[in-house]
Amino acid sequence: MQQLSGLDAVFLAAEDDHQFTHVSQLVVLDMPDPDYEPFTAWRRQLADRLHLLEPLRRRLVEVPLGLDHPYWIADPDFDLDFHVRHSAVPPPGTDEQLDVLVGRLIAGPMDREHPLWVSHVIEGLAPTEESPHGRFALLTMVHHAAIDGASGAELLTLMLDDVPDAERPSDAGRWSPEDPPSFPGLLGRAAWHGVQRPGRALLLAAQAGQQVAAATRHPAVIDLADRVRRSLRGQLGAVLNVGRARDADAESPRLPATPAPATPFNAPISRYRRFARRSVSLDEVKAAGKAHDATVNDVVVAACAGALRAYLLEHDALPDAPLSAMIPVSLRTGDEPDMWTNRVSATVASLPTDIADRDERLAAAHRALQTAKAVFRATPGALAPEGASLGVPALTTLVSRVTTRTAARGLVPFNVIISNVPGPQEPLYMSGARARHYYPVSAVADGQGLNITVQSYDGSVDIGLVSCARLVPDLRRLVDLIAEEFHALHSPDGS
Image (cartoon, rainbow, N blue to C red):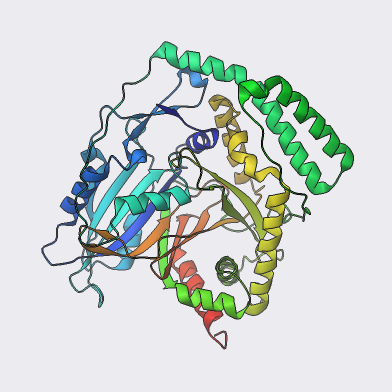
């Protein structure tokens, strides 16, 4: 049995009747031969690997009265057939039909009586030149409480093979379920955590204050935070086992102005979704960055800014002020005791949507991301997962609801989420079927009706956009504009 972290629990608390916080992967694969049976092959592959796929075996156990964060247990009633489902697109099996189906499949909540994931095997896709026997897709949806972007990419590599003729694991499918904990046991754990929580909050507040003070170079505040932290560590450190090294002083640049300017997609969302995707060459993106002395992430943000500018101009809705983006930041070091938990924070960057020239826009994106990184280093953003752990679930839920309602009234801290997740650069396989593309499928929320996520995989940059169907109904136009921006940044004449 393992307790969810506070940040894991936040993704549960954020859900309601129209906001769902599962994150998904759409993998498009080649049929290796005309007689291949994707559903049978995928179900067998998952059954053989369940001992490696811990997030797929765990279900929630809620604490009575919401007195503490829930727990994961290895589901004693696990039913693989509940989770693996068979779908298809009708003829002619176009990519647009697949995107429409994905938008429909992600537009609903997970069943919390089961482990929080579902995988759809989608058949009927038309063949292409590189896939003469046809194609199929795997849409795997996993709740954000169980994984973040980096651990989701790791999960995919465990679900698939790195060679087309991989052997069946020797310990295939061997894992042990757990009995649910007792009611008194859960209450006892909640009581002990309740005793610990105030001390942890004081220590974390002192550490955060010290970090902010160091960034602002205010000697009096630094000294106060140091003295408070030393005092608390002496009294509570043995019980709470805390004490962390501090980062060096850093300048504290200004964040983009808040609230962010109004756009059509910063409004309350419906429960209906749109999904759209494209792929561009990773080599082209790297070449564009090299030509402009920029990083891949700079190019991604500049392409998104250029596409958003063009899209909003077409809708006569471009604000005079630049838009801003929330940029997720992975906190993973590789030394985590549990990789299947959220280790992510975020920073906010200004998007140069107010700049018409493409090269100037890329340079501005580079500067904005440098500022965002400096701001993140200068503030206690890395403490976000620990800060989230201090809240009682009932209070966390209330805060989450108030935050989204405030955002829905137009007081948004940023306009859009833009995430760039590095993925495997060697091809992956499923029972001999080669995975050609790996598209991320993320989530939206009230006030944030558009999400742009890109994932690099096997020489491609695979772009996945999710939107509220009411706020951004023409999502395919926006993803086309992003692909055009990538190509233009790579083209010598910028066309």
